[in-house]
Length: 521
Ligand SMILES: Cc1cc2nc3c(=O)[nH]c(=O)nc-3n(C[C@H](O)[C@H](O)[C@H](O)COP(=O)(O)OP(=O)(O)OC[C@H]3O[C@@H](n4cnc5c(N)ncnc54)[C@H](O)[C@@H]3O)c2cc1C
Ligand code: SF4
Image (cartoon, rainbow, N blue to C red):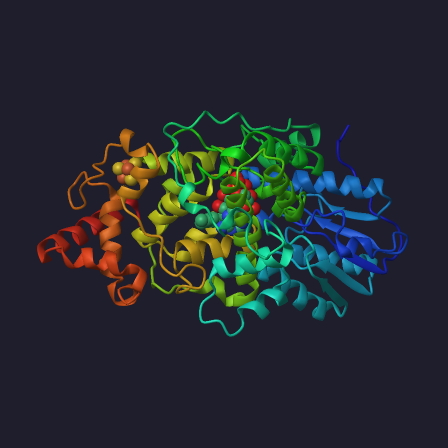
């Protein structure tokens, strides 16, 4: 007995409402405006979305299982649903083909959808609607607190887009963590100084809530292993919410058990501790199972009731109200060609160990191992380990961005691209971050215990056993001196470069070239 069957509707369709896998929002305007008798929802499982960049098996299972649960919920509410399954004999493999076929069969007068999370998909829809001679309505996504137009209004005419200023505006606009006199609650806009503790003497974080794998998810796992066996990543431990109900439980669990310590240990990294005090809710928010407003409201309420301190709550609110909205604003504001920027002109290959986690660098092994196992690592691991390595080793920004897009359960282009190309790779020349987050083993050793179990020497930079992060860090600064040395925020780094003798510079560059060859970069 199959767990998931949806019979296609009979007859013509007035409006065909396309719901993509990251748009599982029961309250979406396009759904609210439907005439349930005359219109129909189209949902599509297509292999192309898992293979145009190789997508982690868990990411693929998460999207498909959440879509199936959502489609069944729509059916229960009497929506007419056309559902293309991955294993349907007639599955065409791409959105483009699946929509073309549905339009030919159902002859809708209009295609309707919420703004997709990707320029590629929006442009495909626009060109397809023209070719098929059918009208297309694209509505704003209610699952954000700022529209792309509002962000562009804010950004227009500014010399630099600084997240901190955007965030303060957001606080004032929404009233979150604001006092009646217009001042921030707690007397400061941020508490970053209190939020940099290492994990060394931290209490062990309680195990996070993990939803059980139901029959629909089990079927999808089997389907993915059968139809897309070559996708990267492992499926052994699938722990992501695929319904609104389980997403709400994951949020409750975070607020109750981990939020109070979120701030303090936000930047910490520790071997075999993938979650620490992080929320693990990004995939649920990005698939629209949770609304960012309700998440923020819960965190603020935890502060107001005395359950969590201000440094934790402000730190968490900043991520959602500040960074998440800012990143999305940048994505639409900067335009489709953002994807191709390469300010530092880097072209190295992505090493094979990014797909397997098999490397002797302890920090990379831990972080990449987590990604292969869970499709997840937390922010500082993404930024300061796997991202930092790609930046300083000179990997092609598109190659590393595609890796992040495929390998993380929470990845959607609007959020992955600016975080990777902008924040990590400085490929946008300073739109997202005013300077590159390049770092050597000093930083990694301060914020983690990785270096203690590593065969490399974290204190040297040009020797055979020197930490590759050190060799690449100094090589990065030297090779990009013309582009970066005038940046005020890099002044200290370039003072240190100036102290290196010509012989040592030559030695570091030679060692970096040798390492790049060994790693296949
Ligand atoms: C190279 C790189 C790639 C990234 N790719 C993604 C991605 O594909 N999808 C994604 O959702 N996030 C991405 N991020 C941002 C961030 O790392 C993740 O949102 C976070 O680690 C998710 O884990 P969590 O839910 O436990 O987050 P927590 O640490 O608990 O943070 C709470 C929430 O804040 C939001 N958030 C925090 N930082 C950011 C940010 N920089 N941009 C957007 N939202 C943020 C997320 O919704 C997150 O769930 C990326 C960061 C980097 C440096
Ligand atoms: S020594 Fe270098 S490679 Fe090893 S864990 Fe430390 S930073 Fe990573």
